[in-house]
Length: 459
Image (cartoon, rainbow, N blue to C red; front, side, top):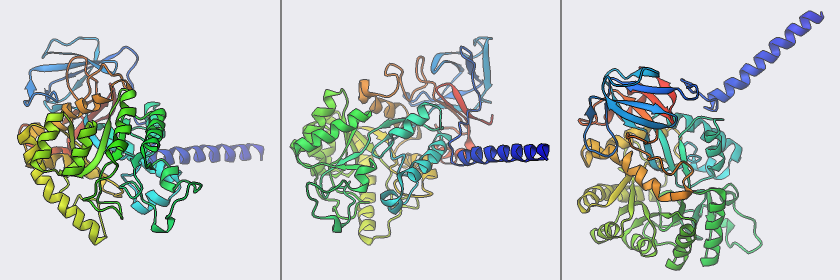
């Protein structure tokens, strides 16, 4: 009987452990590194063509040597070392890891109702699952433009879960009645001794009115580890009460955030659509305009002259748009979609610095369109120019974080170059002709390397 009981206990223990591991794996929380490199062992990628993230051409006749988390060298074909692990790319195309400059890691794959009401533990588990899926789509880096992402970032960087590098903004800063104010009308008026709203307690957004309060909330996010600060400077589509034409935050309020961020060596990015609100941002030193599809030609030229970045998304009110049941929100989506087409054409014509983002938000099931949305940029520009917006150009935008960058600041991001970060992808497809292949990573993405660790290899 003792032997039988011991055997039953052993089976129960093993079954329970397997169930726990299965649960974590199912949520994308188990590290899935395919190739664990021994310390000091180099990787040599051969038999390839590559796009370097900067030059608008695909190069051949060269091979890539990776050592540690950097690209040690790019050498002529057939001259690589003999003491490295060889990965034969089969003549396919190598690109830098993709970068999404406008992503919400904890808000992408949950409904708006869930994001505003559910236990934060559930939100984080869904975010952990989605982080692994994001990496498998080839996005090795994202700039998180609002949400409680610090814990997820720590888990990814520590190897607890798999996912992309994260440049976190922390909670989005919003004025009362602004784009980050998701309270119900029954919560008004807010009195000084009222507790914080759920979105504030969970770190999704933070309400701040007046210069002193904006300073406090900005400094709190910097203390938590924000690599840049996100403010809501105008109305939006998803929020229920702020019309899209509204300007939000007074100049002195926005300037407080800009100065506090600058004191920490970093910058402010701003959610904003309309011309007047964009100009207000530029006058106080905001460095990155998020969205901006309703800018007029004068405002676009001002963006160029101020050296600001335009972090823009292909909002086209199509099958990939964030779903909206409210007719008012649908009307706002349509207005933005019409502006999107003009924005890409006029922004390129004026020479504004542009980087790619998606802003897939509170859209369960929408995240897999991430690569497909990148491919849509080729409707407005040559394919390699579009791909550069999600690689070299995006890496340049992220470098504005300076010493607040959560990753080594002296290693270039978003490029295939000597001493660049070893975030590399191997694709079936010719980006000189089309980047539609990026929209189907399951079929076309054969290798995912992030910092020399291989997370997918089906060569």
